[in-house]
Amino acid sequence: MAENLEQAIRQEGDPLARALGLEILEVQCMGSPTKPLVRLILDKDEGVGIEDCEQFHQSLRRTWEVTHPEGPLYRFEISSPGLDRPLKDHKDFQRVMSKLIRVILRDALDKNTVVVGRLIALSETGITLHDNQHRKPQDIALAWENIVKAKVEVEF
Image (tube, rainbow, N blue to C red; front, side, top):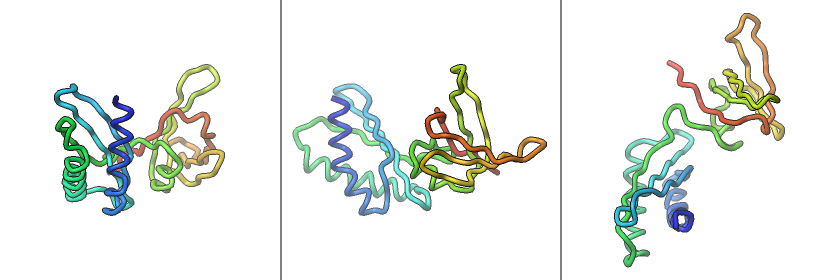
């Protein structure tokens, strides 16, 4: 049911999000059958503000009530990915070019290695980080297939 609900939410929500200059990054369906909860994470190039979340929430709620009057009353939670957002695809990495990121790599011994550096290049084969946290600054090329997880590091 959650997969079908996620598809239905995306089908209804994607056009609304695009009209508002937003993108739906993630849909999470949870809660009980009597109190279903749907969490949506939105983004846009300039960052998502509370007004963006409220506007999308109102649009989605109204549309959903009109197109699904027979279904249960869904609670929608709308948010941004946050400052330390996870990076999942090429588009995410492109958005954070020149930012400091933390990458967890899978190595040959099935252990994880953590690399932190500034994203300086992006290609079909992987990414390149500039690591200046060690005595000798260096550029590090990382292949896509070795990246387990990545996220933006919050800088102050």
